[in-house]
Image: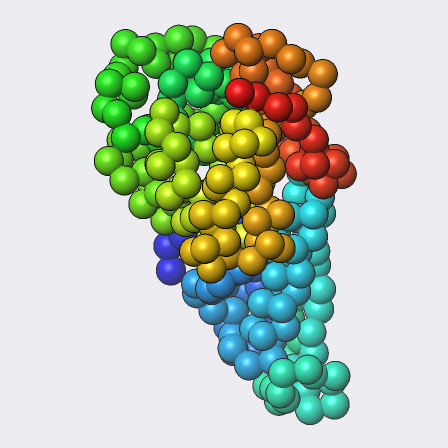
Length: 286
C-alpha cells in the first residue's frame, strides 16, 4: 500500500486521517511489525491484520478523528495500545486465537484545514478574499463570471497569502458545492439574487456541520425564506442560514468595511468554542 499517497489524497480533499502502525509483535500475529493502515471517517486503506485487531484499531482511530475535530487547535496526542490475540483476551469484534500480542501506534495526520468558500467575487467578495487569503485555510472563490476571476484582478490576493486559493468559474455556481470539502464554511454574496437562492437551496441539502451565510437585508431574506419553504425546506433547516452576516457594530456600507465585519465573523468561526455564538451574530446590509 502507498500509505504516503493515501495520506496526501486525504489532505488534498481537506480531510484528516489516522495512520495506524503495528509497532511490535510478540509471538504469532497476522501481520509483521511495521504494517500500516490509513483510517478515515468513511474508509480504510491497507491492513494491520484483520479481525478484532483491525476492527479495534479502526474504532479507536475514528474516535481520534472525532476528538481532533472538536479540538481547538492541533492534533490529539498519538495513542499506543496493546492487544493480546488469545481466546482469553477481551474482544469486542470477535475472537483471534493467534496466540501472540501486538502493540499499535495511532497518529492523526494532516488535520483538516479550515475551508471557506465565497460565492460571488464582486467588490465585497474580493475585499473579503484579500483578508481571508492571509489566514492559514483553504479559500475557494466561485463566480459565474469569468472576468471576476481574471489573474490580473486577483493578483493582490497572492502578495501575502498563506491560504491555498482555489478558483472555480462555473455558469451554475451551486454545482461547485459537490467539489468542496464537507466542512467548508459557505458565504453567499453573488451579483444575482437568483444565483444566491439557487446556491442556498443546494447548500441546505448538503450534509455537514458548516456555517452558511447570506449577505443582504431582512427583506431579501423574507423573500428567500418563502421561496425555500416552498421548495420543501423546513423552518428548522432554514435556521442554519445566518443572515445578515458580519459582526455587529459596523454600520458602514463600504465594501471594505463590510468585508472586515464578515472576516471577523469567520475568525470567530475558526475558534470552536466561539462557533455557536459567532453564527448567531450579524448586522443588516441593504
